Image (tube, rainbow, N blue to C red; front, side, top):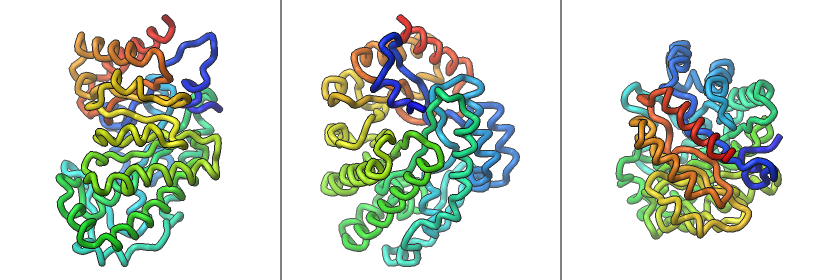
Length: 345
């Protein structure tokens, strides 16, 4: 079963493709998801219920026929599986507890507790069995720097003041935590591939908050080491890196041997990245989710600009970040129709 990345890296000579999926394509903009979400009291309980996770994952495939499904889960399952307390508060987002000093991380497990994540892998198996053969299945992981921020800041990182300060004050302790997270991400990625995923997207959602002095090790180096370890075990697996807000560091991510595609955020001009793309790699993105909300000519022009800019390279159509809850369903349908009409032209 070809991955969505293989579709663009090894296209059929008869078909010009811009395959399409959206980050957070299973979520609150869908009425069927909102109804399903009522089945579980907490978000984590929802994520760890295989039946609900499978249903949520398949909902956008059934409604829109996206070219890939992404398993319904969360990047913070890794801190949870390492023993940190994780909850999701309605209207506020994730809350992580138990850390007021780097020494508190000594309480964490020294490796991933697979039993806490077993339902994620069983959901992947069920989704793969239910998907059409031509539809890709994406697993994902939060990257160590982004996970580090949530774990240290206790929630959404803001300016990441505490984490950045600790990285300078306690470099050995923080580097040890980074190494622990690297190993956990590798293991979680491999287990998702074993369960049926063909692609892993690595979300470094807060890469833009990493200080320049730490970027090479904490973001770029992590991406290199994790993607290399995954490819050593599963050479056919595809890796998509999403280093949101990384700025000038993007060229280093593009150059990594074991990264097959790089997903661009909304601040990155796609047409400027196209000439930098190494042979044999793909770009993904990068429609602004707010253009998707607004619709009309704003949306059609934004989609057309992306398609025109990427027509000479392997390209996966996606957003520059996750779809937002207020997105009208009909706007999603319109984008899919526009993208698929373009690929046939």
